[in-house]
Image 1: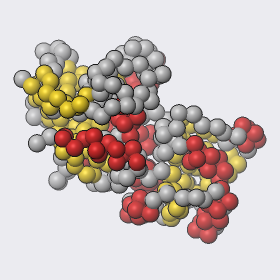
Image 2 (image 1 turned 180 degrees about the vertical axis):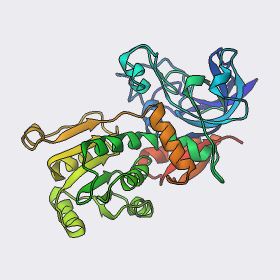
Image 3 (image 1 turned 45 degrees about the vertical axis):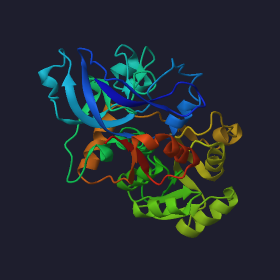
Image 4 (image 1 turned 120 degrees about the vertical axis):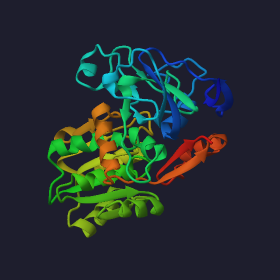
Length: 357
């Protein structure tokens, strides 16, 4: 049986849309009929070889790691105790660890130091009508009213990655009343980060940063107390805005969903002494930070990579209960390349998802 799929054949070139064989699931795998696959900036970066130094890829490859769909088949070794049956709606945990390293044993399979894999970055991903998934990484979803695969697919990365990052800020003790928490980069990830900051903020002032007024408007709808347009603004101008809005010139905590050099520089320019920054974005390959500031004012900088099974499960539960919202635009499979260009330019409000007719 054949299926539609989009493949990377050569870095720097558009995806090729082809018909390929539907995968045969291994004994411990499920065959998933893809209902929706989120379109992430990292898909565009992958097409242009951004990850090759850290994660060499054998081409051709089917990208796509934000996957939700229905079980269409089961391998012979999928246990009944997993309670995963044909027709069930599932979301895919993208980080497939080898199960043997310390990180895997702690549940952080996305940080596997052994022979871990990431769907769409080796194993064929969700830019196809079907995908084979180890049953251990299929998360069963009980949808709320009107919620389908297109609602849940982006939550496996865009929704779950900032959730993990916000949990680091919560653990640092800065999401409390009287503190200022900044969410910078209101794109696919930042719109969720605003919601989590509000949910777990303990009364802190939540301030959204973006260079786009449309994205700031979205942040306001999702619970930001204040917004700041950072286009062409330096640390002094941003501090003036913070003081006007919150009465404080500096931020206690920042989650950076961009990862651009300019954004990171601004973060360090406005953090208060003892403040904490969590970075989840990967727009720039390298950034420079002022070491004297990092040390001399005792700042804490967390990297936060993707999310684990538990993080994703918690986000899916919040979403199914109506406590997390998203802005989703459906994209036809045949239009995938032109819409990836929109993602790369930052022209997308919320998340685009590929759907198949």
